[in-house]
Image (tube, rainbow, N blue to C red; front, side, top):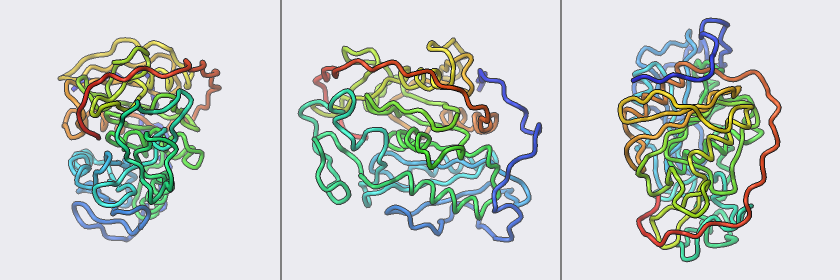
Amino acid sequence: MRLRWAVAVLPLAASAARTSGGCFSNEYFQKGAWPLRSTAGDGEHLAQLPDDYSSSKAHPLVLWMHGWGGDNAEGAPFREAAAAQGVASVTLEGHGGKNWRSWNAVGTVKSPGPRGPTCADGSPNFCYYDSCGQCEDGCWWTTCDDTVATVLEVLDEVLDRVCVDLDRVWAAGCSNGGMMVYEVLADARAAGRFAGGLPMVASPHAGFQTLPTTPAHLIGLWGATDTTIPTVSNTEWPDVSVDTMYDGGWYYATARNATRAWSVGHGGAETPHADAAYDETACVSYKDASAEVTECVFEGGHVCDRPDQFATMLKAVDQLRRVETVVERPPRPPSPVGRPAAAPRRHQKK
């Protein structure tokens, strides 16, 4: 697989790595996946280290978050792929209980937002009454808990116990977990703690575009035939798509809307330039941004378990480090007022 990153980065050996407190620890870790001690959230968080792990060497780390209603089983293929490439990983579980675990992210429980309701009339009610109490409208569909706090608590434990390169810590996730990537990076509590984000088949809700509190790379993957979080607009608004799983549906930023905002927010171009296509994935990236911003589209739908997806993500982890240069962000252009009409189609939720 070939992927040309647009932003030049220093070779990994150019400077000494900033390392975590777990370096040179005598703690023994079993092979394969093992549970963390943290009780943050409602589930279990599993870590997996490379087979040749040594506490005398700082390793990259990826925190992976599952999709709506998922659990650790969803992240197992990624853990295995990461370990094979010398990358430590943790698959987290969200809030809400078995079969309902979710992440509070980029508008999932903030409707109506800047562009009105985040779903169309007639969408099913998924309100999490136990954590939300009452939902403002029928568009809320995840826990209302502070799931950023859960992610950061898990990160703290891993850094205390495992030898990690602090400039190569990444947030990754699928669907609702991918939405959580944007949420974590935008939270002031996470400032400077992540090199970047790796969202898969995930975009913010329309009107809830975010930028990281400190510069961070974004390598996003979207499915060309995804009907859950569509890659391109299927509405009258060019920057908004609507899922077609239900009568009604939820509104999302398109892939191009998400990556363009990230590039502009890092001082880069508004339009991507063509990049090399490989296998069934085509990627474009943006010039002049202070962080790598790459938008990849694969032939497929709402899936997060393909080897080519993992290869793209792990290439970013291998080649990119945390951005240290802070750029002045230009003002964000105002969003159009109103919301698009939903397509009257049907399928089922993430």
